[in-house]
Length: 181
Image 1 (cartoon, one colour):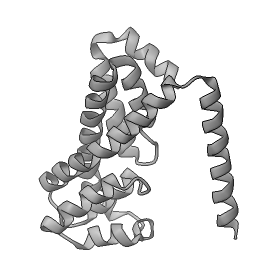
Image 2 (spheres, helix red, strand yellow):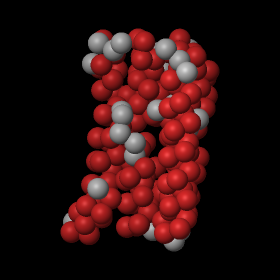
Image 3 (cartoon, rainbow, N blue to C red):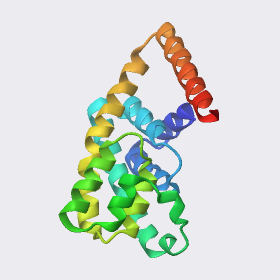
Image 4 (tube, rainbow, N blue to C red):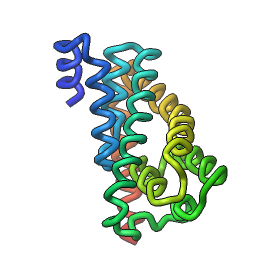
C-alpha cells in the first residue's frame, strides 16, 4: 500500500499535499485505521521536515472534521461501552480547561486510539475550537515520535527490519497469551 501511495503522489505531484491531507481526514473519520502509513509516505515523498508538517496538518484537519461529524450524527447512535475507559470517561464528563488539558494528554498517550479520543470529545461538553487547538497540540509530540521512529526504520538495513519484525511478533504473542489467561 505504501508503494501505491508513493506512486500516486509521484503521478499527481502538484496535488500530493492535498491528497495526503484528504487521506488523513478519511482515516480520521473512519477512526480505526492507523495513520502511520501516510506519515511514512509523507516522510519518503516530502522529506522529514515537510513530511511531518503535512502529517500534522492532515491529522489536525482529520480530527476537526471527525469531531464535527461525530458530534452531528454518530453520538446519537454510539455504544457508550466503546468509550468505557477511565481517562476517556473523564473527558466525556468534563468541560472547559480540564477538558482542554485532558484532550492534550490523551492525544500524547499512545495506547488510546485517536478515534476514541475524538468520539469522547464529541460527546463531551468541549467546544470545537478548544477541541481543535488541544487536539493539534497533543498530536504534535506523538507525531514527532512516530515520524522519528518511521524515519529510523526506513534507514535500517534488512537485518534491523528482521529484528524489529521478530520483536513485534514476540510482543504480539505475549499479549495474545496474556489475554487468553
